[in-house]
Image (tube, rainbow over all chains, first blue to last red; front, top):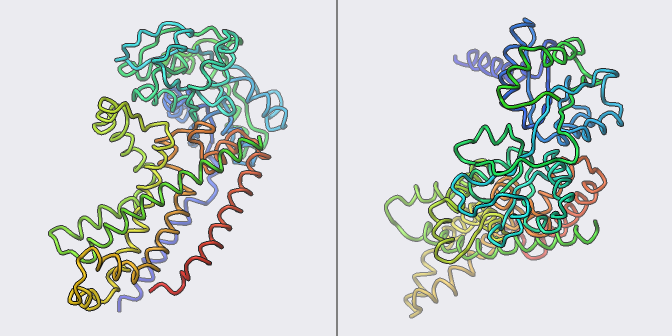
Length: 253
Length: 223
């Protein structure tokens, strides 16, 4: 007697399972560097208001991880990287829509310590102290902030001393978290990341980087939604979007 | 690259080996208690100890960070009293793997002890064996196939542990970077050559473990 109802239930459940896989033409997938997380989450709804019918989907991770996904054919429309290196490699693999690449924000590298740190660390050279057991840095092999950090420490001839203490984070946000929890005595993140956890971490130095920190953004060649991708690229350069980014501490490229 | 891969493999086996050894002792003890002792809240204890099997490894990782981290109550105490810091150490990886894999040996050991006929243990007592002797000369030998099967599952699970290990021990090449984490790192960095090599090594290791397991224990015959 309840068989029919049961069948209907199963049918509805199956439909509910399958429905999310149906292609959604108006989705715009933006793969963005982890450091952009908070600012982009605010920009997404603003873009949707200006472009009714388009839903922005964000995918945040370390830039190289995003690049690896795009290279393997992930359906991404826009790629925003935290350094030129990752974008150059995307370009070399012919993953970008020709002429779409542009720089849209700048950032700064800072050395942070837990806010209750009593070690009195002030400079890069202080990382050599024995009391500093762990230094959280992004993995230079896959995380741009790690590449900036490594280059700066190499320029200061401190890399050899710091490398044995390095805890390689999977993204800049993980490095931030390690320091905020006090598991690492110091770490390197962007100024914008440190600003998010002002109560838990303290910036002790702004680090001179060997190359300026600029974020490139580009449309992906295989974009399922190229029109919206172009609109998003234009959008992030509008004064309104730049104002939001500036509020999170991002500078002009 | 080659040398570092072998170091990673050795570290992975070391972590899995320790996690298995610890779990064998704890799992047999807890399995026996749950199977043979009546106490209030027994099933609740069983449920709590089985949690790591059901909870996402990231949840276990978070719990561990909160408890054994420098600011966790246990981690703080260890740091103050003994200068022990478990986060970002291979010992931390062992703890993560041990806890995540523990329910596998617990469940097997409990079922194995429950399948031992209590009359045999009673007969041993009547014949004058003390409780320790009954345990080691009757209960454990009779439950052994089940315990061994659970132990091998623990070893396999520990080899592949990823989520909790990454959160607790981080990814420090040569010190806490196990095979599964090294694979993840290589894929993240787009280093497909390294990833292919690591994946092949991991697969061969696991097949070798399974073959060895087949020889050691007739797993299929476990009741």
